[in-house]
Image 1 (cartoon, helix red, strand yellow):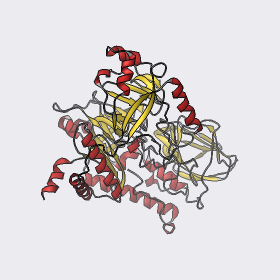
Image 2 (cartoon, each protein chain N blue to C red):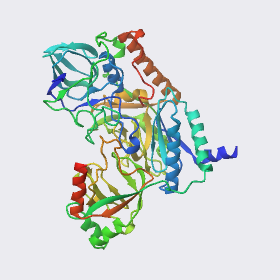
Image 3 (cartoon, each protein chain N blue to C red):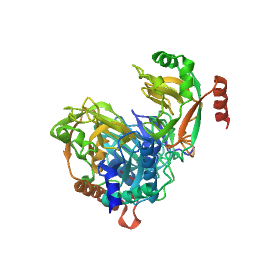
Image 4 (cartoon, rainbow over the protein chains, first blue to last red):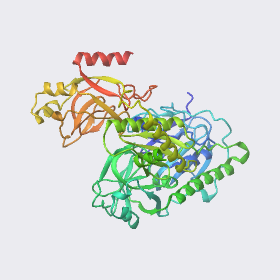
Length: 330
Length: 243
């Protein structure tokens, strides 16, 4: 038996994810991948991995694992109680597990998704160049599905010692209790909406229970289509962060499991704020804020730099970069 | 230059966030336009520009996904216009000439097509006539999307167009062939759905583990549905299992 973990409790929806599946959207295969890209990358940094190693993504209720082999893990993402053999562990930290240790990640108190990075990365076969689970279509990750009680998980042999610094400076831990403000660029069809969708930025929206990795339906003031608007468009490719508006006027923010759509898109959440949507839970309040392209691009660069800085703190500057942000993310 | 301004007139750009650029060549479902769209997307993909992550073609537009910290969109647009000009200048513009003709075996009616009777009734035809009309059409594949391997097809004879079911089914088996309004399509994977099901193909249209996950068709190809008996359907299924 060369498994590293036995799943004692699967949690409510725990899947294997990496940075996503690239190059197959033209076949209708969505990108999938970790919904909170920042927490995903930090979980890997804490586990001593390159940035695209596969992790466990837990939604709302975390899982309980028994370690069968010595390993090193990093836990990030939503705020939740994390216990090793009954003792509390700090979130956004890395620590060792010995055979027989039980790691329990509880229901989240703030945010929506927890990430467990493991030294070497979770070992599942690559399907279409990615280890991410597409649970909707039933492929990738662990047998194309969410984990179940009794599943055994293997990890890839780590290429180096994972025992990096176990804690990270506070400034690298996002405060999920802060009000969610998502910065946006005007959507591809902003001109289809009355005053180019200004209402979106003037009001507060609430995350409904209709929220999964395809998208998040919001509740709030309905957005009015302009009187001369055709309403929808011919089916066209979409991307995570697009805010589409069906006929009822209630916006839907698209996430990682949608490839095309025919609804007009009023705005698009900028790439450096997308991670926050991965932590949006039903009932959370969201405000949208317009920014210009220059701001969006410089915020994107800041995000890269922040991760680079954290990598240097955790791994030292001499080891060469494990981060490949270019071309790996959107 | 005159030629460059021509490209600028015919291409329309829409920003889709800081990491996406939609390029539109028109705003209608049209085979020539679709062919040109696919060709331009393919040429651009071959350029393998640094920072470009993925290119996704649709009916008459394509989306370029890119890393915003790396890629300069003005340079990208200039490149697109140059490639567009190449396409405009080339003469081998026979629409869909390069596409393959693909036969999809379908067992119509019975358990495979529980809505065949209602499609017939809706159009004042016999079920046999619906099968004859559906299996004598040629259906161009415009794009794939919505679900893995799902083809957006044109070409349905309007004499068998039928509205969707009022209440969608919670489970539609993989391979189901259906009609929704003036469209026909195939479900590559089992899913919920509201299309009127008239038959089913034994072919595995989406196989994530295969070297080519969508083995039978690509945008640019044309599909023909060929009516097969239940015996033939089962024989193809068995062969796929053992092959």
